[in-house]
Length: 179
Image 1 (cartoon, rainbow, N blue to C red):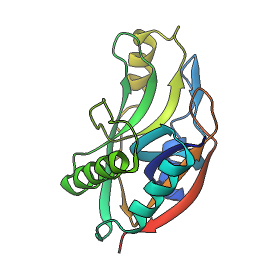
Image 2: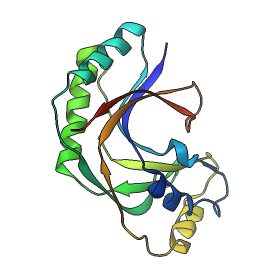
Image 3: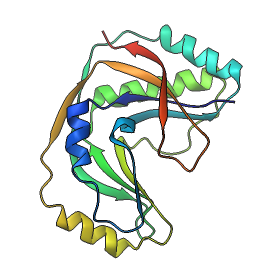
Image 4: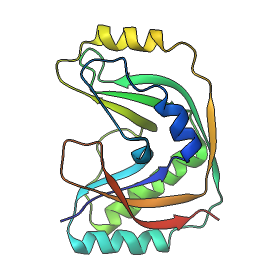
């Protein structure tokens, strides 16, 4: 069974800028810049029927134009027990609408409903369980100001991932242009 998710790829120049933030945090497993993305809908391990239905749904999805994506800061997920270091994506109505559509398409394809609230981001590192929130706070403080990064997303991708603890490598299985 393939492990699938939909998302927006990150252009190489933006990935390079984000990669400059790598290092300096103990217990971090840094994501390769080529694997940076904004997840729209994680489907998980799905059977071939669901995977094919999702692909067909994406081929026939509502047409929409490219959208501007703004990365506006560094943060972490997990609070007192941090689990990931991220670049936050600024609130964006078009992106939220696209994600809601992907949620609907995934359910129609047979995937279980997503239980987590959509919080758009780019995962930069996964953190081990023994990472202390104080270490993450120190890392974030040492990073200084985050220069806003902007790019135009002109396609959605269906990605596959190997079964692992996350972080890639990811394979682009299909691309759906935003035109």
